[in-house]
Amino acid sequence: MKSERRDFPVHYLATAPGESRPLLAKTEKAFGMIPNLERTMAEAPVLLEGYGQLWESFGKSSFSAIEQQVVMQAVNVRHACYY
Image 1 (cartoon, rainbow, N blue to C red):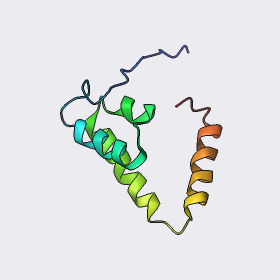
Image 2 (cartoon, rainbow, N blue to C red):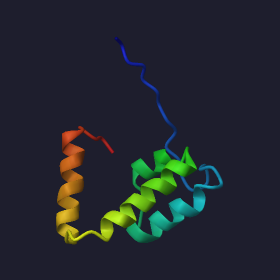
Image 3 (cartoon, helix red, strand yellow):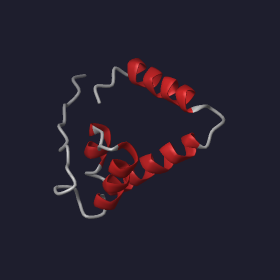
């Protein structure tokens, strides 16, 4: 079965749906930039909001900041993430 490739827009603050703009601004304030993953998720504001909530919850875990980054990078490698 051949999978269908779908390209999603990669938004900027100015091009994102209105509901996503404050969420992207919050990300930019926290990281000093907006990663492509969040810029892509901005197409679906509810998805972007949920991802932000997940990120905040993970930040409250017992893992140190470095351990959290190791987990995130391991996930990226495992899934061949290009973001």
